[in-house]
Structure formats: C-alpha cells, structure tokens
Length: 288
Image 1: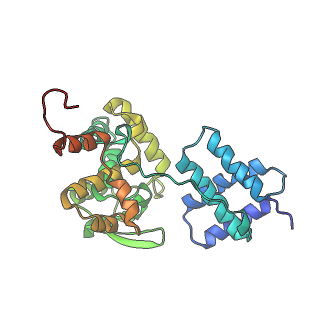
Image 2: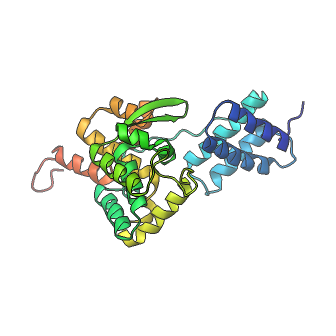
Image 3: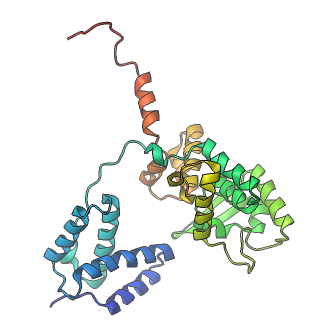
C-alpha cells in the first residue's frame, strides 16, 4: 500500500502525543519538525529512498547543525512508528561528544551578577528576582509556575515535569527575598510570579526581557537565555560537591549522561588543566 503524509494523519499524531502525556513544548517541537518532512514530500509517496533523500538534504543544506538534524529525524521516526511504517525509519547521525563548552556560550558567575544588578538598577525587580530564583535553585524557566507562596513559606517547592516529581530546596537568602516580594506586591497565595490576571508569566517574555538586558549589562547576548542559568547552577554545585548523581537528582534528570552536558568546562579551563599536568619537560634547546 502506498504511503502519503496527510493533515489528518498529523493531527491524529498530535492527539497521540498529547495522550502519551508529552509536554506542550515537545508536541510543538515534533509538529514543527514534521512540517519540514511533509513539505519535502509534498504529494509524493513516502518511501525509504525519499526519506534518505530528505536526510541527505538536511545534511548538505548547510542550514542546520547535526544535533538539530537528529531531532528532525527523531520526530520523523516517531511518526513512522505511530503509523506502523517501521521500514521507513532512518538512522540518526552519530555525533562525537564535545569535550568542552565553547567560551562564547559560557555564562560566568560575574556576568550573571551583572545581569541581576543591572535589572535591579533599571527598576526591573521582578526580572532580577526571577534570574536569582532560576540560578539559585536550578529549576527550568517552565517550572517557575510551580513556585507558590505556600512553597516559599515552607522553603521547598514540589516540581512535576516530564512525568517526574521532585522537591527543590529554596536557599534561605532567596526565601527571604521571595517573601519580601510577595508581601510588597500583596500576593497572599498562588503563584509567586504571575500576571495581573493571576496567570503564569509567559517564558517567552522572560527570554525577551533577558535579551534586552544584555546591552546595558555589557554581557554577550548569545550567552544569555534562561536555561544557561540552570547550567550555571549545575556547574557551581558540581565544583563544590563533585557528586554528579546527586546533581542529577536535583536537576530532575533520569540519565546522568544528560547531567554531564551541564558540567562541561570551557576550552580555556581544559587548556589550563593540560598546562598544570607538567607532562612537557622543560628542556632548553632542540632535543630532536
């Protein structure tokens, strides 16, 4: 039987993902990725040969990194499984794990402090407190909606994300700041960070506000996004504890391999470690 991708199939697949309790962000990502496949196929029959052509088009188009291409292929393979078209699945590209973090993506503690202090000086108290809350607890920006007045008073917040639940401790210094914030703003119950209508703050707005802060704080824009604050929390914790299993639990990771991504050091730090190993002898003159 010939196979074609239809709008009805894609909508049914969306419903399937919802019933599988995938997050809204995951569903949106899968559907966006599948649009690329559907656009490539058009009204053509979907065959293994055409799927391989799609894979090669993505690879040689110089538009996407291999990690992005793999995410597109993963979405396609998931859709093929749902449809029972197992013979159409293709292999993802093997990517050698980079041993260090690019300096251009490494947000330092000093840069983080600049962002927080700049936000405060510009009268953006809520934004500065959001930055501190994410960085001091390691929660995802999407998990801010779990932070309630009751949780702040207890000093712990229950997080439910991706089918898993965990308890996150709120440092005492942060707890005091949050209690002062809710008291000053007359927030007696419910969400700590909420809109005038009592709804969670949209994370895209937080992203935009952080980007707008970069110029005034003199921090490179490519370093500043909410998830990088979570990375800074992970690196800071690991530098003290050196316990990756405990860190994985705190971040809500099921796989320690995921946690390893969060504690990568930079090329500069790798080079410094190599220099300190002392394996190049200090011999004057040419020894060859």
